[in-house]
Image (tube, rainbow, N blue to C red; front, side, top):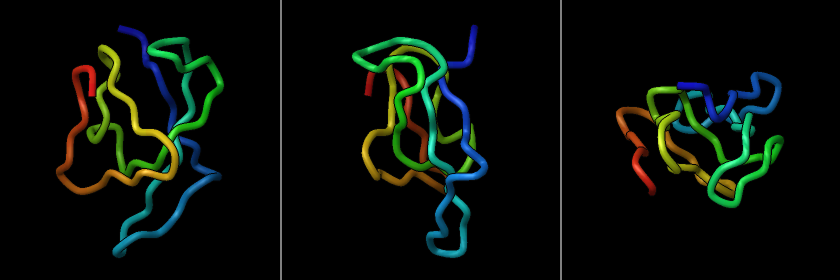
Length: 71
């Protein structure tokens, strides 16, 4: 499985004592194009690299939250 996004270490925000990183698409999928920016996640465990799941806009995902499947 190839990764579908990367964490941008130089584009981050602080929320509730946690550092969240903006994501950038590494390949085309579900209307996303390689290079498109998404929302913010704390760690890769928050967003699956499989299927079509994505965090968009300025949405923030952290802690034990997990986005996967086609959500």
